[in-house]
Length: 329
Image (cartoon, rainbow, N blue to C red; front, side, top):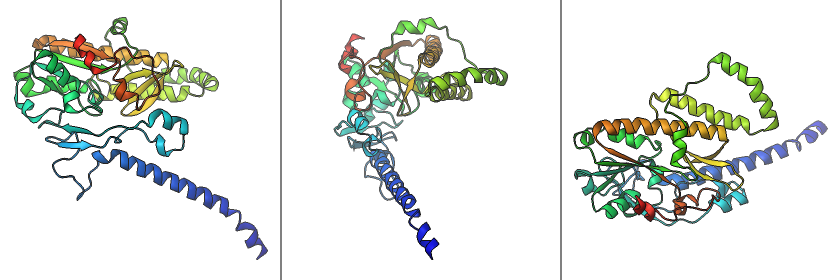
């Protein structure tokens, strides 16, 4: 009996820790469901007249707190202050292809097409997207074929492979990379050449060096894993596209990278490899556009701070305060 009383209290701390962890995980799951609910519609809960904001023929209002990060519920006060900025509701509409265009625009021939990833349109109504602004500035219809969570090059590849645009190609393709602190001249430093994964003997020989550096810098393992994943993604995809976009730099010098909605840091070597891939993608699309008589305008949009500042830590002083600077084109 005495042994029972001696062991019973010892299990209480474990049960308490398990309870705290369980409640924490439940809050994280609830926060994730709340923020990403506009993209999740179980049977019986689909709103009338809409669905996912990237499905065809959808018109609906998105809550201002959808997407983003989960730091609000994780207990990190400093991160919550950086990321937790209130956002207003926005109304979005998609055409029959699922892109952010008013439905009548889908049937018209557009001499100008604007592409990129979904962050081209993030936080903006249809009337405020770069495509809509550029169309008003030029006085011609401009079609938006930015794709969600597919990378900045996916929209351009989709456009060049689409039968409708193949029959009636646009005159100008405006390809927007949402980046900061990145100059177009940096693409010229690396010729367009494909990169290969290291062979197994090369990888084994590199282990001691990586291990030595990791012992002095604990974060190298994470950064090396990100670079290795990028290499594998490119090799397995079979086409020269990238799903990563550099969007800012912290005052401490670290570069922040959007990877399908999450923020990671890159060291200089990994950033250079990323720019090599971007250069390859640009040369690939440019060659195809030249063959079809399409003028390609690659635009490095260095700000959209009113959208990205809500998720990213403070970046350097923005060079373009609003998307209205597209008039500089």
